[in-house]
Image (cartoon, rainbow, N blue to C red; front, top):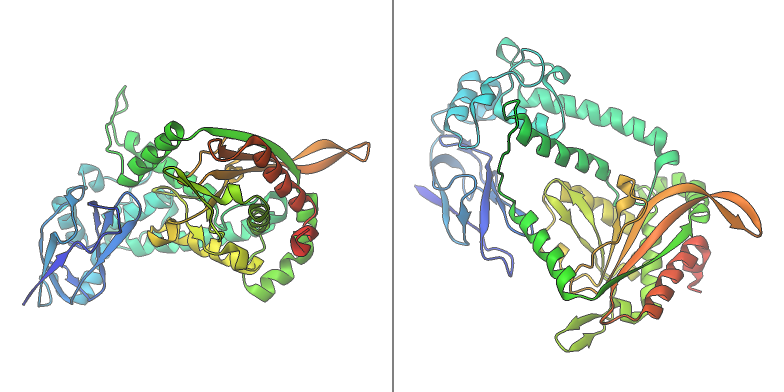
Length: 440
């Protein structure tokens, strides 16, 4: 009995998708609900699971093809598959013959896959090579256990797990000295992945003056469209201020261990800024408003978007009803959204409907920038790196951890006075966090 695998219903306002990487190849045994391939839209990446158990008998589309809702992607047939069933299917990365078959049949695989991955003589299977690239690993970093020392996907995963554990220990040791407001995930890792992908495009080319044309992903195209729309269709202006982070830093250092023990999540700085932003939005509701044609829409709720960098580009998942969330709930939600953003698991619904956005260039070391509004929102808060600087306090020069803040706003809706006072309110609440508790 044949079962068609079709493009699922796409999110509202999304008309088509691009076929991403196939997780299975023709002839493979698949189980019900097992992911067959990824579909990339201009908003999110969707997984397409198998509707039934069987054999992937026919592949109708290739990576890079454009498809619409309801299009047939593949055909599943009942049976165990020519590869010998589940055991051999699961072990495809350790089988030299199957890996070579995958290399010859995949549109995305070139002759480079038969060459050693990294600087020694070890050869990696396609799936292993992909995972190595994603985690910036060379063949010398992985011990191959396959035939003739071939590196399997399991070998790479073991190396990744070991590297993650080492990085976690290192990060914990440095957290007090280097922690800056962020999304709950290390976005510097995202930057490394992105830079690795950019370098790989040229590394595969001959060592000579060369260019390589690579199509923009749908998500990158959408980001470009929205940024251009914001710059052309809003009267965007940016105001700046600086905030002394000493009080928040002391408070966090005093309670971070107990906070993590009680709530099973780290106490970062982002929760303080989310809470400060919400309180400021309550005092200046025009900043929480938006323009809809000739009307001003005042929102009686506070859905705060937190910009997160991912390997596929910037995404802005939203904290719904942020005013009703505790500090622990804010931190936990941001951590969850940040992790899922790395895997392309954030849903369309989780990225729509925000009334205000916070972005943190400080995780990359940015000292100052002018963030771009996320339409139809009217304003966005930009956080930056915390640096020790000499400042004057009570007539004396002292060294304090200072952060530059930037508020970009749509001047069509928000007057300069309101924008400046809004940003000053955030500064005052962060510098005296007890005011957040007392709402004064």
